[in-house]
Image (tube, rainbow, N blue to C red):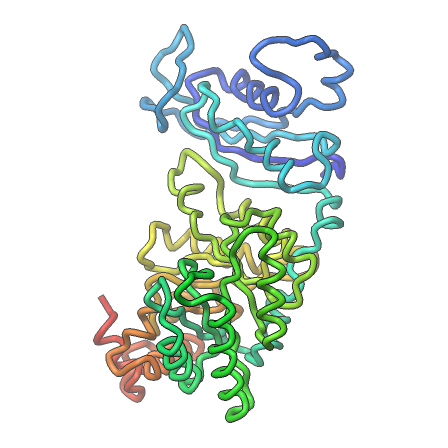
Length: 417
């Protein structure tokens, strides 16, 4: 690709001629507006205008996908669907993710010429990789810190979601650590609440992690939720790092991609990127952006781990989309891959289908209720996850493996639908 341009691919739906609609997109996000203005010279357009590279019609519909469409004067009732590729001059915004988003997304979603508009792919010039170095730890660094190789990291989430009183947190952390869990994370709802401040949570949890590590020789990874205002991120990161923690978590859409990149500049720990609020950006198929685009930007900004949902989960997303998301995270950026985090409605039995669809063990597989609500307690919940993946990796059916593994058998009784 041209190293001085950004290539963005969109799905559009419009009652207008496709060439007209694509020209509106390119003009609105570069040199044009609804009418000609002084200074909009041919020389300026040549240097700064976004260009339409290609238009590929893929469907014609009879009803609009979104409300608020302004119909052309001559309209036959058809809405044309197409893939449109635009090229933006890098000189317009430079290697800046916040300003890139203003160009490739910006006001596009509000244009009345469109009854559907979605960003589905993005190619960035080398200048972005030179400024944004991507994940510092990724898969290899995470495995080294957790001392887990050749299998997934098995993990869970502190529940209830809003968190626990400090001594209850201590007891749950102790039980999970004694059960051999690799990874625990704060829920995204539990940041720095007055009833259980981050500073106190870090103290309590790290006491339990260190106690367990002294006994077992293995130091489990805990992703402390340090989400906050920009000026709080370093303070929160340093608090975890100085206590001997090995991971921090942020809600990416809460702190923004600029906040994530800011954290990545000084982090000494893997960044666990939670994508909560992602649904509002993607659930409508005629609007927002694909995860393919989102993950590129998150990983470029520094996410070492990135949530991808889970197969047959409690949230809205097809299994095919989840599999694509896992594979996208495993595609290297700046020489390294980020670790996909599988979660939502997961339990030991979901390992089979996950492994069959992805053929990878480079994942963090989280089960909140699938571990904590195991009928024989969290310790057996951890074992059931381990046993589910043993079956998956060795090509044994879930039911067959459960005959010799009680924890898995009991999980099947509780969770299999």
